[in-house]
Amino acid sequence: MALQIAYFAWVRERMGVADETVEVPAQVADVGALVAWLAARDGRGALAFAEPHRIRAAIDGAMTGPDASLAGAREVALFPPVTGG
Image 1 (tube, rainbow, N blue to C red):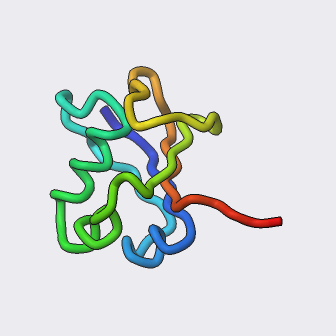
Image 2 (cartoon, one colour):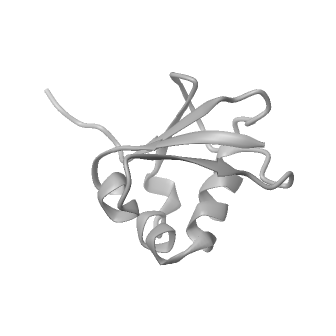
């Protein structure tokens, strides 16, 4: 499945790109598996996703958790926790 992935903040800095389209293997069925697959893909991913519990995600603009299914997804945004006031 082809999937557009957008990276934000320090995740983008560590990945070295703002976004990319990837062919996700069939066994990558949810956000947590996607993050693990990206971490195992290369050194940039290993650095960006070394602490997967810190990563937040949105599928097609809707915030979601690591167990959210990728079925039918067009875009996944990955970013660190957001704070502000």
